[in-house]
Image (cartoon, rainbow, N blue to C red; front, side, top):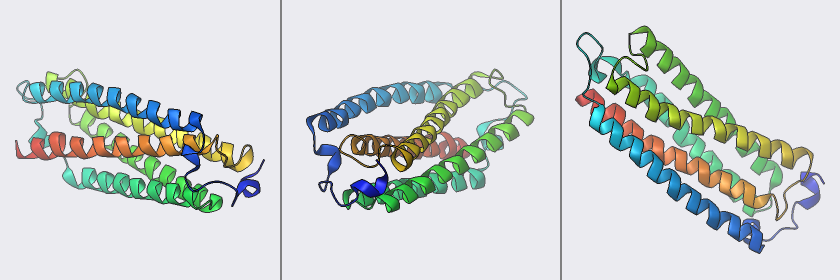
Length: 206
């Protein structure tokens, strides 16, 4: 079934139209709770180790370039907005608009990942490697773990775009998948705001 076959035939909130859909949303909230605890542990480890830098190795004040990180932050925040537009389009049964906004979200996600890879490349060349110090290990673990979540989100949303556009269309089965993917994307955006504040801003001011 193509996307056009189902346009205009779904309820306002198709992700909640079935018990299975509602259970998926509830289950995903529980999953995000577990993810929050996991990220909280990584944040705690980073805060405990962020001053553990060996002599001669770059400190966070010397290392971080806020201009690059600020651009990456803006890209990710805009992608959160485009994912909202995608969900709004889904609620209006505007399937093509939903897919277009999801595509923009994916492109922005790739842009964020590109900047993060460039950032890590620069840090390594400045002597800030994973095993350089306790600070570097905790930094790469936290920020890299978030980057892995972004990469997974990009692949997930890309898979949904392909599935909806070419195979199953937008139905009460696929709509909950889009909705929870949007929840996931918002979650990793919120986590990044905390990373930007705790890791980069606090690191820059010492």
